[in-house]
Image 1: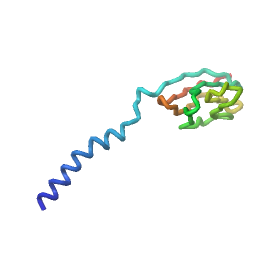
Image 2: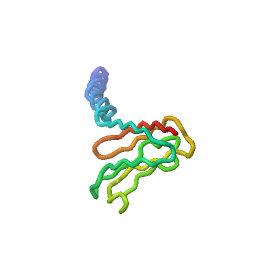
Image 3: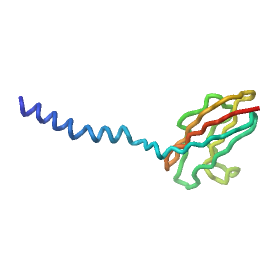
Amino acid sequence: MRRLRHDKFLALVVLLPIIAHVQGCRDVSSVEAVKVSLQNGKMYQYPTVSGDEDGARIALQPQHYMISEIRRNAETNWVATFVYQPTAGFVGSDYAEIEIPTGSVAFYFAIHD
């Protein structure tokens, strides 16, 4: 019985650092903060990655958007581009996050008249 308890404790000691590492994998230093002052009604575009294998995705949609999407077409020269336009008439703050292969980008929008 004592041997079984010792084995469980040893397994916990070995697994705990692995679990902590996996939980902390999101490196805060890999998050780029972009502050944007934008007039209501205007569109904002942020080019991300252009490789065939590289992708981008919206991890957190803004709350006050009319357009919030990743575009990759001839118009963006095949670069995955985050496109944002606030809801008509909205003035205030908005926030969005996108994920790219090198980390994340956090957008802090200040929408004004």
